[in-house]
Amino acid sequence: MLAARTGPGWSATVDGEDVAVRSAWGGQVAVRVPAHTSEVTVTRARGPHEAFLSAQLAALLFTVLTAVPSRRTAS
Image 1: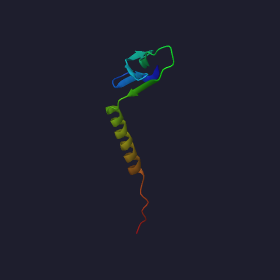
Image 2: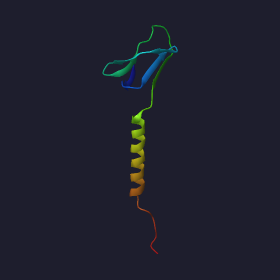
Image 3: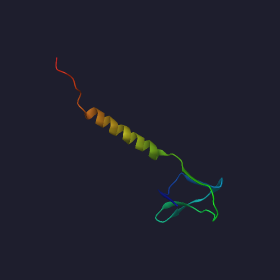
Image 4: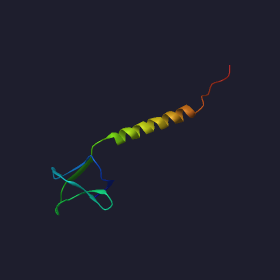
């Protein structure tokens, strides 16, 4: 189980083979694994969510930089 909310874009492999990603314990990402030692890889495809976060960060940075008064001397 991975401490992340399930949603579109999640994929997983166990020992190099694709496995189904399931929802468990409050909607967290879960993958069924065998009882023996295995290599598990869980990935999430990038989607519009990351683009929106980047745009929000850019807007915040722009706001902060333009809110700081310039240090011009009076001539």
